[in-house]
Image 1 (spheres, helix red, strand yellow):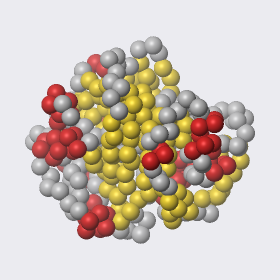
Image 2 (cartoon, rainbow, N blue to C red):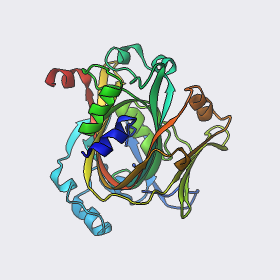
Image 3 (cartoon, helix red, strand yellow):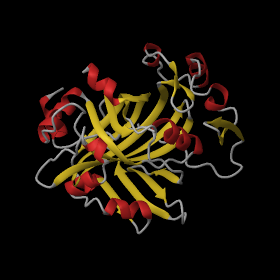
Length: 335
């Protein structure tokens, strides 16, 4: 990694975990035919004839090549799916063939971040302190345009932490993660706009997902995500970010991992490996506009004491592989 990039990344960073090209908004009733599937005893709607309806997270790459001939599948051909039990039978990793995201990293109140993390998790990881009393949170808006779970939008709010088993050295740890392209966090909130994405995330990963509207629109200069309050239906949070120019086409792999408590109470971890195809970043605060209301998610975000915007990442094209969670103990023993 060039020193210039390390210097920029050292000031910040975490691409929020769970993991993201601009996709359609929540379908209006009757817009597309639906079928049903059952996950852990829950009957949920899916797109009739969609990838999940037909293949349940294990579509042959030949089908993807036929239905989306413009997508480069060379990376996925190197990866092997295995059948796993994650609260329901599925396959790991889950493939995301065409996606994009925006990530914004802010400083936040360190004591508040610590208070939001379970004691068991804090024994292994803590928020990275970038200066006295200040940690980092990442807000990432993902649009999964074409993936094993059909298509959906997701917003991740995560605390930037050290890697389990590694010392928390604040900025030094951040530099290390930046140089290795291996980022760690604790996920606070993860709204999605399809029932399939919600149930898979809650049952399979024990992540804080809920179903709500996530509207996406673009102008010639910006990308705008609107997160609706699932109780009132009103716009709660608006994230408007600039479409940066001078995009890099240097392909690179980035790993985003999270520490969590599994359904059985055991510490676990999950991760996604992303293949970034086009990307750019900026530290200009005017590249980002976060608008909060009096809704539930806005109120929660306000409680974090957000401060300076440290970094903005614009990634209009990437691919990803999301792996099933595993016990943290096993990872620590192998390191």
